[in-house]
Image 1 (cartoon, rainbow, N blue to C red):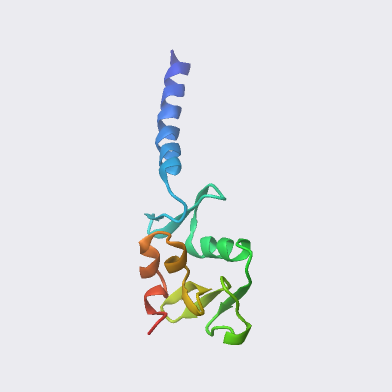
Image 2 (tube, rainbow, N blue to C red; image 1 turned 135 degrees about the horizontal axis):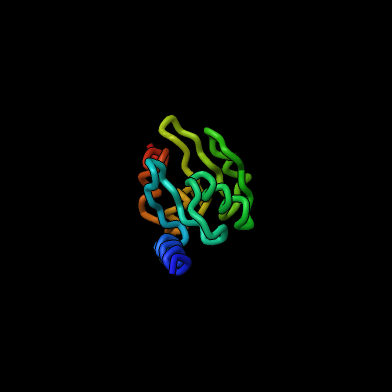
Length: 125
């Protein structure tokens, strides 16, 4: 009887967490213990925003220009290149799309909350 009770308690603790992860969508944001996290489908776990951006930038097949407070020279960039732009307010992943720099979230359509995160609300100021 005691073994069954322990098993039921264990499953009740695991079940909701597993269900939450399964219902999360790639690029979905959440607040967890005062930190913003993103569901990364490839890693199958919640990660911090910058890790999510770096994983995308390094794995989507285009050039990643690194983390910088300046954009790469216009004549050298190509469609879907990325740069993690640094502003006083924080960072924001930018993607070169249709001949101009855009927030990666505006191209990829992850969670709308990305546009309010870090430096993203300020990249066009």
